[in-house]
Every structure is written in structure tokens, then in C-alpha cells.
Length: 78
Image (tube, rainbow, N blue to C red):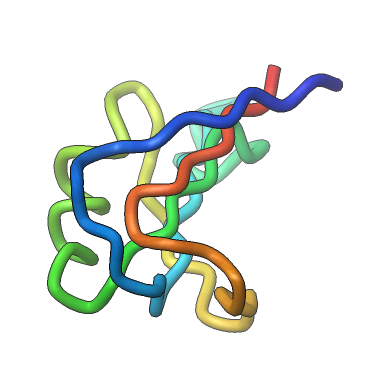
């Protein structure tokens, strides 16, 4: 599996939350992770509603540490 790195937006604050974009599978919304997007508190809602695009479902990974990541960092999994 390969991973592509990209950046969304212009914010440079430290990330406070990780939003996973999960692919639907067998009628379930939360299948395998296809993208991971880090966001600061201010952009968390935007990350969930705009940065994770259909057909992926946004899932907040509360237990995942965000240390060392900045707002808008995104990793796409192939």
C-alpha cells in the first residue's frame, strides 16, 4: 500500500484532531481508511465537511495522537 502526502489550505497551526476518510464497504459507512486529514480546532468542522470528499465518510479518530502534525496535512492511502 502506498501513501501520498498533500496539504490542504494555508493554516500553519498545530493539529488538534485527526479526521479519517473511510471508504464505504458492504453497505457500511466505515470501511478501510483511504485518507487521513489533520486539523486545528478552528478547521476541524471544515475538515469533516469539506476536506473529506464523497464517497468517503468522515470519522474522528479521537485516540490518535496529532503531535508533530500541522493543520491541513493529509495522507492518502492507495
